[in-house]
Length: 325
Length: 298
Image 1: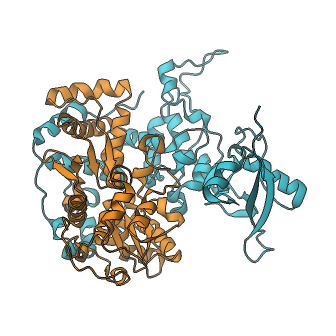
Image 2: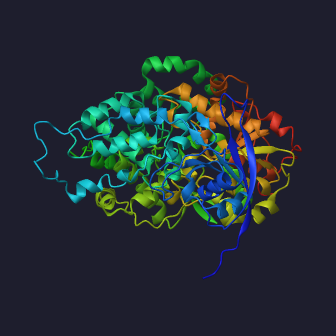
Image 3: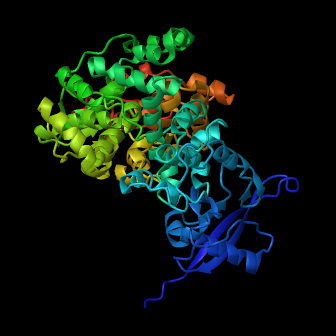
C-alpha cells in the first residue's frame, strides 16, 4: 500500500472564553499530518499534545452523533468528516471556528438553545389519531411508496451545520432554520400523522416563507438531507392546503398568475398581487425612485409569442396538488 | 458561436442595461445571439414553490424551443440559469417525465433533454476562454477592486448546477482578473442577496443585502458585480433600504457582469446603461482610465 505523503498543516483555531477574554483570538498550531487526517483528529491532537485548554464538542468520530459541526475554512462541516489535505491545498491554511448563528460558550462550543427551541416548536413526534390506535403489538404499516416520500429526512443527525450556514437564521430570529423545517416535512407527509393540516397552517405563520432558497443548507448537510428541497415541498403543500394566506404564499401564487397573462413578468402588477393596494401605497416612494431611472417598471411588457401554449400548460398542470393523504 | 439568448424578464424590463451590455459584449466577441420571442419567464423560483410540475413544464417548453433550433441556451441571470438547469435535472425523474411529456406533446413542443444551459459567466470563462477575453481588453480595469457577488442559483444546489464550487467558486474572480480588475474575496460573495423575501419581509431582506454589501466594503471593494439582475435589484435598486436596515452608509456601485466586461472592452457608460443605476457608478469609473469610446466591433 502506498504511504500517503505527510504535510505540515498550519491550523488557526478560534479561541474565546466570554466573561474572561475581552475578544476572540486565533491560536496558530502546526501539525504534521497525513492529507486524509480529519480536522477532528487534528484538534484532538492539539488538545492532547499542545494545549489541553482547547474546548470542543465531539463524540462518535464517525459522522453519526452530530456533535462536531463547526466552521472549517468558513464552511459548515463535521470536523470528523472533513479531511485536512484538500483544505490546505485549496486555501494554504486551515481556519477552524465555532458554528455561526449561535452564541459561543467557549472556543468551538456554542449554545444550541435556539436551534433546539425551533425544533421543539414543530412538535417533532408522530401525532396518531386517537380514534385509530396502533394495533397492539404490531407496527403501523406504511407502503414503500409512502416511506419513499421522506426517506432522506430520517438521515438527519441534528448536527446544526445547516443552521450555522443559513443566512435567514442569521438575519431573522423568526426563521425556524433548515433542520426544523425538514423534520416538519417528514411529519407532514407521514401517512400515520393526523396533524399535518394543522402543522401546515401553523408553519405558514411560523417562518416557513422566510426561507431564501439559497441552498446553503443543502451544501452544508453531511447527510444529504437536502433541507432546501424539503422546504420547497412544504411551501407547495402549504399552498395546496390553504392557498395564499400569507405574504409568502400570496407572492408565489401572485407570481404564477402574473406570468400566465403575458408570459413575462409584469413588475408593477406583482407588487399589487403580493402586497395589495395598501402595500402598493407603502411602496410608492421607492417605486417612484425606481421609476425615474427605470420607467419600464410601470409599463406592460409585450406578450410572448405562442402565449396559448403557456396557457395550455397551466390548464393541464395547475390543478392544486394533493398533500399525499 | 451561435446560442439561443434567454434574456429573462428583468433584463427586458427594469434591468434593460443588462441586456444592452450583454449585446455589446456578445458583438465584441463574435457570439451570435439567436432570439426567440416565444420564450417565457422561468418562474423565478416562485412558480417552483407554487407548483413544481408546472414550473418544470414551463421551462421544458423553453428548452424544447431551443432544442428544435439545435441550440444551447445562454442566460444572463443566476435565477433563470438555476430554474432552467433544475428543469433539465427534474426531467430525469420518470414520474416527472410522465406528468410533463403529455402536456408538452399537446402543445407541440416536445423536449428530449439535450439542451445545455449556460450562464454568460460560464460562456466567457469556458467556451470563449479567458485568453480570448484578455486579448479583447482595450482598457484594463486596473486599480478597481471588485467584489464578485455570484447569486445563489448559479452555484446551488451544486449537484444540479454543476458550475464551479457551490461554496468556494472562482470563475467570476478569474474573469475579473482577466479584465484587469482586482477581485476582492469576502464571505458574502456566495451568500443570498435577500431578494426572495423582498416582498415577504422587506426589512429582513434589506438587512441581508446590507450585510453582504458591508462585507464587500469592509474588505476594500470599490464596487460589486453580479451575474444576476435579481441580486442587482436587492443590491443597487434597494441599496437605500439596505443602508437603513444595517444603519450605515454604503455607497457601493453595483455592476452587472457584462457591464464590467464591456467597460474593459472600451464601451462608454451610456453604451451599457450605467446612468440607469440607482447608486452612481461614477466613483468606480473615476478609478479607471476614461474610454475613448470604441464600438464593439473595433
